[in-house]
Length: 466
Image (cartoon, rainbow, N blue to C red):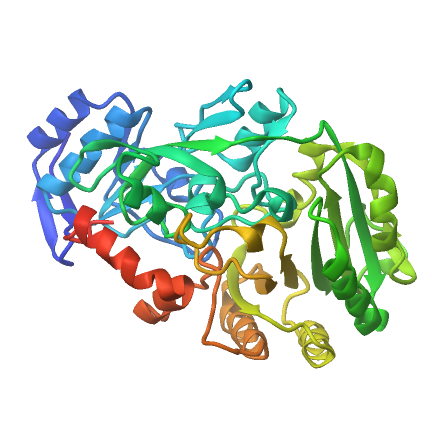
């Protein structure tokens, strides 16, 4: 290999000789890609089309030893390093300009121990990979709602889904893990070994090392679930939102639900007569015994006159892919979030108005109800900060053209500013915009856990390599 100019951790550049790169290549079972490689460009493409970064070296790892080799290489040469799992993070953490990108996407194996109800998931696996393997045994763990999402980024920063009220968040269900530290050491992290590090990765983000394997708790789910998927007319929006809010207050944990404000796309999936209409979408899944689900779910289909009703019993795997087509690779995404204790009429009216003035018909305002197992979690179980019962408002700006960046990002920020702040900003770490606020964004994401996380960080990564 020829010499490479790579970005150093301190912002300068470092020349790494071809001989040293050849030594790395000899001990590396995966593939090392430089900008001269004909396949390099497609491996720089990640889900969010806004992110246009070009690493100086992409290391496509096949196993933990590959990750260890490239971490030690980066440490030796003091190189800027990023880590890619599924490449789905909105802020584009998985790529860095000029440095080394550790790409674990080839590491997507999932092994299921059906007797112990545990899944062993490599760091590059997606939610779809995990769901498919687990459902072969009639099992699942709570994950998000877009199957191409990487399990690593989702779990390390939280993880909401339709099973969360019943079984907790994704991060809550991490039993143990394998981590390559910034020093290049391989650690088994569990309740007895490196317990404080386990606490940190249960929602505290991915900057403590490279998680090459997660071990998740599994639960009986499926193979079929009852799903409500109703588009209501936004003209009845306030009434629909009130009823949805009130149903959530008394709903059993088996029901996970999402409300979304948006515009019906021009698509064969929807009747032509409702194309372009503003909607209130109610999606709900019943994760318990299906003999009870049909009756439990009926009220969610009866909130008002519907524009379209796609509710049905369906395979859990199919339910987990309902939103896949709405979030394709390469679209431009800017998502911000805020928790609120109160979803009153005043806030709902504001959100309905903000939805009507969105610059892109692809954008939505989404609301999750956080309750049940989420709210009952022991705060010391993990570092995710906001388990209390309440509402999470996500403003999802989604659009196509670069020239529309400013308008869409401004709409997202101004919409989120309408959400009342009762005890300081509380934001969901997986929806951080582009992390423009730096340290302040981190404090808002981890709240009172921030200082404890900083202590763990200082112990495992004093030089801030990740």
